[in-house]
Image (cartoon, rainbow, N blue to C red; front, side, top):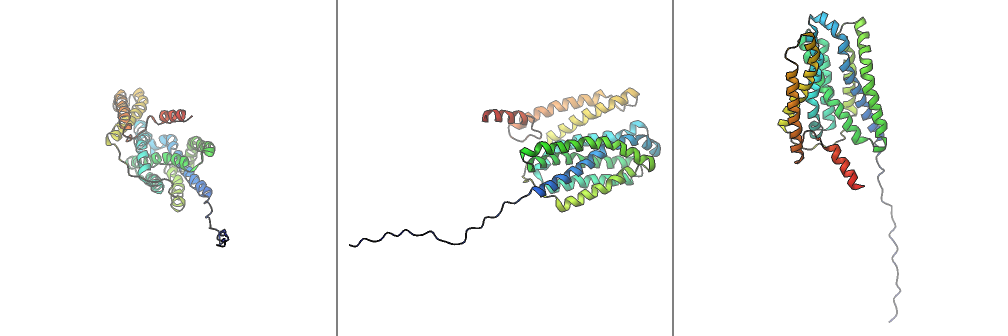
Length: 296
């Protein structure tokens, strides 16, 4: 039989598959981080403008120093209560939703303060402002850890440090300048357009950078954290009032409640950590360090 010629088939020729180019999100990420930095600057600036205005508020609203001090004390208490819950909110809801909630609350509180006819409504506005402030800072940190590569996180954290240090430094100066020429309400009228502009720009530019997931929150941990941090802050802020003889309750009482609640809160978190349900992961740093040691 004649031998058959062995023919090697040639590879099929045709158009090469089209590979989609990698999406460069660096410009988008820079814009998102810049918006969050501006928003963080505004909310931190707002924390420090009230101290200089207290004498003017005492005169215009006919209140005592101990009553006026609640504008700052209530702000800090609200921040202390809301911040522990923010971790759950960041897991449960999208980045856009959290940003709208933070800047929406802050803008609404600023508007209420700007039109407040008396101390009561002004205090309500400060509490609403504090709710937005407490959400904004953890949102900024979480977004940076998600978007920024590890090699550039140091420089980005440096920018955040500038924001967190400059805003409290210029706050009293800006407040003093406003009070020199205008009414105390202009402190909030000055901040309101910046907050609203950041909110509107964020509505157009902020994108979701996290994947929301259903998670449960431990109600007992929330209650314990509220009593712990609120008790400690209120007790410490009451020491000065106790020295002047204007204290409403003995300062050691909220301090004692805060210490007991904080101890119970820590024990509760250690217990819930075994089931991965802790409101605040108190062993995260040590566990991460031990993991790195094992891997090396």
